[in-house]
Length: 156
Image 1 (cartoon, rainbow, N blue to C red):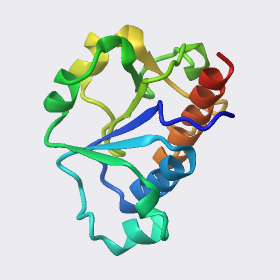
Image 2: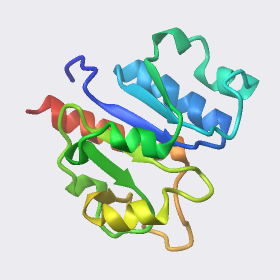
Image 3: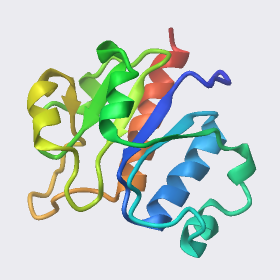
């Protein structure tokens, strides 16, 4: 894979510090920009957040947004990819490109219903083989999707 800073992970109002810390570490390892949309469900000084990111925080490019509306107004619609359990379209059907924003909602509620309805054609999921499992951990999901996006971008 080529070394790129062309992808973005967006966490909308994340609630669980270790998830955000793990995703920050993932972003640092892949030169992916991490966008944190406030309000956050924790302080950025949280010890669990720092522990999950280990000593890699200095290698992570982080952008903070005051609100989801502020973030959305600053982006091109064609660069946005939304991830939810409320669709049947697999993430493998997405056509990621340089500059793509991989948008994930808060752990307990996901993305706003209005966003999912308005951007229904830009919503993707990780298919579950076992219907007893509702979803995967946010950090795991972000990692799976990010590496698929990196694979697609590097093969172009």
